[in-house]
Image (tube, rainbow, N blue to C red; front, side, top):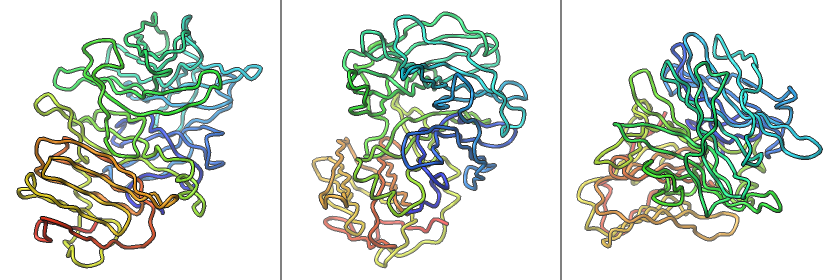
Length: 426
């Protein structure tokens, strides 16, 4: 089950990526982490750093509960480079007589590893419940701009916005978007690419009476109006993708990572039962616009991991890269990886990703309609696949449930091994 090039924690549970940034010559990935158990009962921030986005050093805990304002959890947030310092913005979770109290908090570091908590910088305003969290802050060198996921007092979700000159004192909170169909909006991220404003966010259905999550999915929209229910598209059209966050590299690229899980309880137990940890993050992905459409594909550094070419007709290691191209649109074919994953394309221009759920023995399916199919990239790790279509027009992610330590590729229909370029990933 242990992943190779997808980031995991050494033990416990990992979820949302937080604080993504490039600081003092290193890439930093923080994440929600429970090192004590494979559940959501405790939240601190774990931390990885890398000079090349391929080789990562695990740095342990970055910030953890302890103060009055965050003693029940240091929840999701983001990072900004401010001169020679790194500012971390996060949601501190407290409980008073069993009732949740959320506060937006700040911690500052001189070296990117050791953080000093400044304290609370923003409390929940009137008109909102204490489901008020996940500050994503952008800093342009002059103004700090923050978006926060929220639930209004009427029980419906919203995204709010506020600004600051110094990152510590914040102005009035303004609602910039809301939902009529979802009870909570979480993990917002506001990005500008080629002059287009794009909002990423999590749509969450909740049972407000029981204070429980019913379902959730990550979407984005070009920000032309304030209706979060209209014009939203899934960021990733596969199975396991949630809470994406972006940052900008020093060479101007926008990079995104997400939590690679929306598994069922039974699937989680299967992945966790015989392992010290559970869940992982996606590969770093570059996001960009093409013909005013959002594209995403593996960060260019990922291609440096590709090794020797191998035959698609032999058993291959679970860590592999495969590119399929050459006149695919009018064909009918499927590519099967053992009995775990099936990738299908029809002449009716429907792409299907099918995954065997080992807990039930049945196949789950995700479907995507395309005008044409030019190429498929498959990135397989020990217990996951990430698939990119047409140079990033569509991305589909899935955790897999290994029954063998190798893959046999079976081609069915109008496709031959000559169409496949298969390479090891080292």
